[in-house]
Length: 159
Image (cartoon, rainbow, N blue to C red):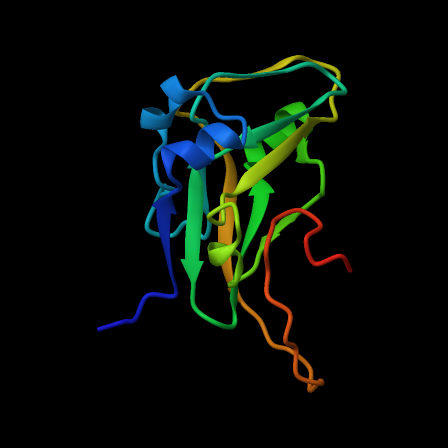
């Protein structure tokens, strides 16, 4: 039997709301899924209707967290169709979710900042896939022991 490298969970309703999600959208949160048996990415689904004007960015609380084993990460990228057709991107280009993020002060809530780099308004309906997560393994160099523990999300490591 294969051991799990990762498992998706919902954050609490309180965390979702405190991160900007609407209470009425919490029950719309769907755990990420692969579309086909050959899909590499796990589709993240919009918990609400998303409207994004050309040239603007938007914070999207996904309501999702992931528990990763050591030496693994989750990389978040836009769905290729939205990127190609509408120039949808991520404000930080690529999102990296580290294995210790699950225990962050915000429950490891995966929040995505999407940006409309195109010239057209983008509408993403509730329940439609808008970004995808790729599970990857990684290595580290030989280094001095690290004793810092993660507390938060974006920019929390202060590096």
